[in-house]
Structures are given as structure tokens and as C-alpha cells.
Length: 171
Image 1 (cartoon, rainbow, N blue to C red):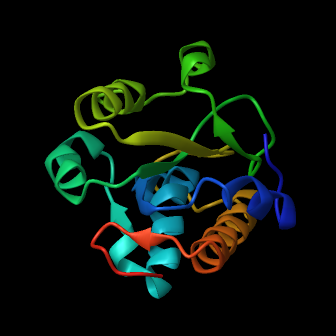
Image 2 (tube, helix red, strand yellow; image 1 turned 120 degrees about the horizontal axis):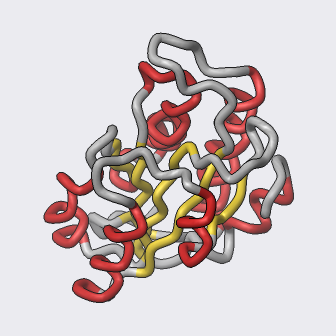
Image 3 (cartoon, rainbow, N blue to C red; image 1 turned 90 degrees about the vertical axis):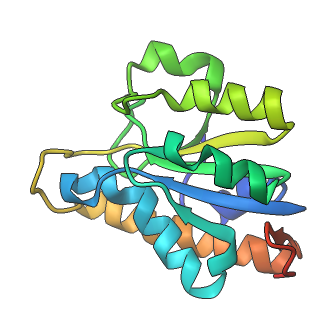
């Protein structure tokens, strides 16, 4: 589990090395479910070649992800793991079924397994605990703060760890 600020950077920095691709997952029309796409949008201001907004259908991007061939694919998504809204953590794939979090048509865990086995890509999930995912709702204050902290931590880590994005452009 990671908190905000410096702790989040400390957790993410060792992961964001080599060729990195961030994939935001979620629906911005459903309040806090838009956390993943919003993080990717903000990081994309500085590093657009590192970012991919997958919306609600990350399975539609498998070919593009494999083509880009990152060393690390970091999914960023709203994940209901029973925490406080805005709490952020690197989720353990083996525990996700117990959380009952997955609202996607095709579970991210299955995509991660496929990409790891078929393409040799390391896949991690950065989850942000949602508070409200009702259609038409706004992002809650806690999740909005987490999106800002997460975006800053990822941007700093990419820059300071000298990671490269998947199109071979150094950061």
C-alpha cells in the first residue's frame, strides 16, 4: 500500500525504469472511475509517448501494447479494495478476485496474465480507491487529490529514473 506525496514516489520510482507504458482504465462519466484516464492525461502533458487512455475497454489495446513492447505496463484504475476514497496502492494480482473490484467486461487480471505470458511484459496495477462511481457524478475530493499526487509522482519518477517511453524516446 502506498500513500500520497513522497511515499508514492518512493514506491513508484523503482518500477518506472526501462521502457514504460501507462494505461489509464475507466470512464470519466462515472465520477471516480475516471481516475485512471485522468492520471494518464496529466502525465501525458509531459510524456505523451508514455501514455495510453484505454477507457473502459483495455482489451481493445492489446495489439498496440504488444507492438510498443514495454518492459513495464502500469495500469492505472479505480479499484475498490475497501480503503478510504483516494487511497492508492500497487495491487497484488493474486488478491484482486477477493476484492470483487473488477467492473470491466474483460478482467484486467486476465489481460495482465496474457501480456506477461505471451509478450513477456511485466504488468502492474496502480489502484485508486473510488468513493463514488455513479453515472454523471463528479470526481470526489479525495480521489481528485490522489489523481494530482499520483500524476506528479509518476511524472517525477519518469524524469528522475531516466526511464524511456515505449516509442524509444528518452524521458
